Image (cartoon, rainbow, N blue to C red):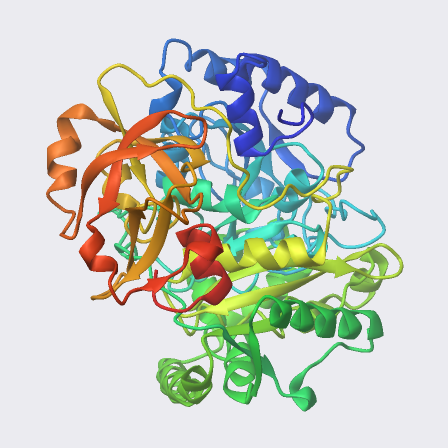
Length: 603
């Protein structure tokens, strides 16, 4: 039974399918919570109750299975367009009202998500603190005397305090990771270009990424499934195939390169997080972090600040008093670099990228603190530029090097304030990082955000499947076609939806089949010594079954798979001959558990 107070996507959808709640009831409850919530300066524009309920009414008569975010409330950072609602980028004089939503927002709306409003940010997404806003300093969701982190401040605090299931932010220098760490939530900075930035006010257009905040890695993955997509109107958009993490070697900066700015608690918590990752099967390797640190310094100490001036400099020059003082100071510095400076900076960046390859030849993932410490609002007000700069120590290099990153909650200081780490992976490894983040998250903390709600166990299995929609055929899968794994798109691209997460009856063995990537399991029915194996049942449009089956090579084929509740479904089975000499991984309980435990062969 889902927790009635939970806004987790899986909990809401189970309640909707079971008839225990409706989207209207959930949204009314969320709006009531927002009305009563203490002012943390989360909002710039809240949609009225009438506006929100119009989005809810648009779901009426729509099949839930066709809308993967059906009835899920979300927030939008106010440098991302929502049609008919002003976009301010944290500057009232800059505001405009777009006629159409940003590409990513429209994808979410089409999938049934319900917007609640636009959230506060460091003006023009210039800052990692959350205090640089004429709408007020956004306050930490756990202790309002402390900074929320920025620039995606309101988006993170809104999710952490239970105002929405997820939110959109942006991330150029760490804006989608720092506020996640400071509010005990997940922050995904996806591969550059995976989520279109059309309809987003640029900061540094060549580096900007739309980011996702969620309470769990599983919710972030569900949002990514919808948010990603090639956009021909965005010159920086690209099609991204999922990459893998080939092994569990994780790099940490050398001890002399770690910086905690006097925060012994954060130092202790980072060491604990590294030990947790080792307990999950990781091998810790110290790396030379110097190329990453120098690249991080280039973002504001090099010519790239000119790209911020290119984005909003003309407006600033015409309206100098419209900008927050520290924001104006930073962006005005973009007038100074020359074209020669730009080319020299680009050349140095390429040299640093090449130098970083030494580290990547040794490790598969890098683990860093998300930040080295956490400051009070008063401290940042007294020293805004220097303290902001320290927060980018571990974050500024990611987009320069086209890396993926997930900020993961990793514990609490003695004073109750959260600590977070970031898992950094090569380009395209977003989903592999999220899978690892889900495990690390649960090994480090037990609660969600700033809420008194428990972090649920990983991948809970549903006992019973909902009814199959007319015109669909149920297909049982046990490997790379499962949710979040490399071949799942072959189902989603054909309009399939997840019907059930369950197990087989205890009559099967699971093997790793030889062959190319992505590696595949083979599910074989046996007369004796069988085990229950985790599977997913997907509802596939019947008209697409043939084209899907044609993509499945031998020795796999269709057969009848017996599930643990006695039901039988059409599904993929392996011919017994193919298991001869293959590794038996039945003891892991399923393919997902195998790859998460070993991060061995590419999934």
